[in-house]
Length: 224
Image 1 (cartoon, rainbow, N blue to C red):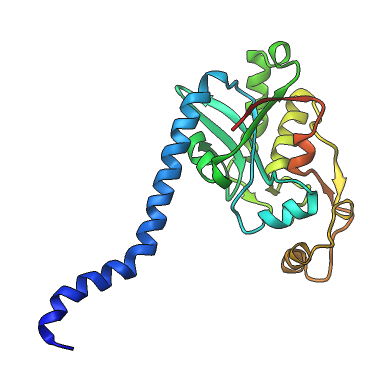
Image 2: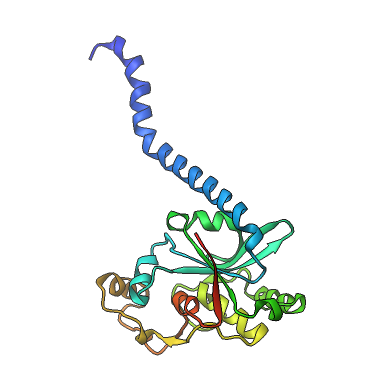
């Protein structure tokens, strides 16, 4: 190759090599901006204690969807902190996440919020204080990859179920056992082998995101 061409070709080569990374950053930026716009629009319709659901982009999301026959694979509780909305969620670790960040993490930025049917009378300031207090001991806990029922580690729908049951006596969704789910798909079986090897805890108590989503105790508030 003629040497005089190198100064012109090198920048182009670097730009081409870097493009996929720059493109991913741009997409993340655009999705977050869209999430910020969406959350600003819906903020007036939200209430403390609302539940929010989306399709997670995590590595285990597809297995959860297949096993539970639902698109919803992640969920959390919405709280207002000053002028800002946050989602109390079980990820790694259990924490509060800005609502726009939470929305941007979901597939296509789509989500649904739900609320207790009688929230207007039940979720008094005192009840909301109990709701928040019930979740405090779980803050900072590790995410439970094994979907156990102890409080040592916590997964997303378990967090919601325990917070509402312990603070308000409301059981959102039907508790099941691991054996009750559809474990037949190869993707589900691969994830089970990865987590448990050959010792499946089929009798482990489990609450799934879709079980809470379908609870008759809840009504849909927003669909985006």
